[in-house]
Image (cartoon, rainbow over all chains, first blue to last red):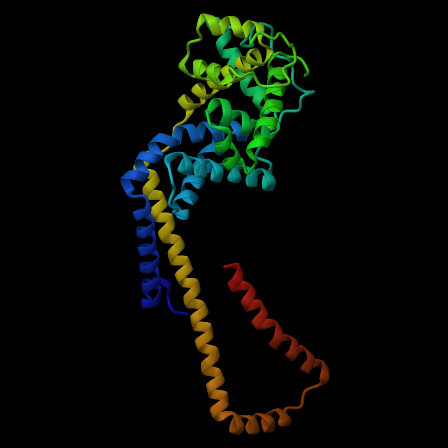
Length: 197
Length: 152
């Protein structure tokens, strides 16, 4: 067999693929991509880390999500649309990984102790002493939710996405988002207050 | 809105206002008094407030690679994928060329070769089990080769 890279056909094919990549970059240039990455990398990592429940896996998911986004090289109507597409790719990655190897970290409700009194944010600012404990409890409470509920709540309240954007990212209808969000919100509130709703 | 329903079945019309206030980090007195009497807004404040705090924490934890590093990694990976794809197409091309060449050879020299092959085969005296093994081997080798190429 002819050795891969030395063959003119391979070189030609590689050159064509690289040209295609350059054309893709023309859709979104290097500088534009970098700026987009700077704007989205941290929020995306935060999303991936909290919905997967594994900050270490979030690094891999982040890289893969940007690569797939880059490779897709689509034209987008707006920044919001582009952002939604990136989050959609990221969500699907985490879901696929969960299907394959259970990367969603789920904490069974029964095994979970209710958060200590006074550590749940009720109203006003919490005292500095309880802030660290509160954060742990919130993270633990999020992990008790179903994966889709985590995605919904994070996008709606942590990310500030609109119902339409959430629908696009999660592949739901806007009406379902409203209903499911209300249900997820009630569930998280119940966990945070230590009661069953 | 001043309902005091303990179990909020419906969203409150002031929820967006509350979300904006939470994002800004300041809740006015009037909105504060509304929250005290509205179960939906109380619940929203609890949940959205906790999630916003969690997001702030997660964003500080995040240490993504620089945009330059990320772009370089993606370009490298894209190039590797392009090379693999090119090698695959070359392999297919070579297989097709070989098949065409063999067909041509057998078409041009078919009768002569066939006649001689029949004579040679007829002169070979093999027992039926040995012939069966030979036939299986002749069938299995190309299949195994194909499977190996697929795995690579």
